Image (cartoon, rainbow, N blue to C red; front, side, top):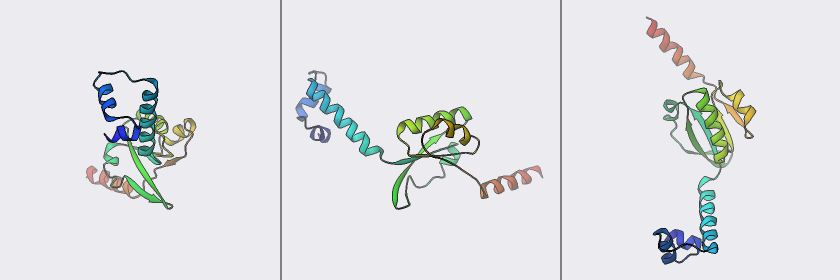
Length: 139
């Protein structure tokens, strides 16, 4: 019913179309398509894409963050290989990402193919922690 109201289509007409009892006329079809696009645009908003392994993405607590006075959505793209990371970067841009954050091993490549800003993750504490863990495992 909410969609019918947004599309300015009587709910009974929408029900008949969805149940296959009626074919939409061109005006109704245009209203449906316009409403779907409007809903999709309002849901998407500005977002920054983050490409990383699932184990890293699982540590992201906030999916929305206030940055420079703007509320920005963080959308996750999981990748386990260079190829998946490049594909995820292209998909993120196609999805409407305003910027991309990714690992240093893939950032030079995706910067060459994307038209959005790319920021590189530079681990500090996690790198030191990993080295310490490796040393402990050697003992």
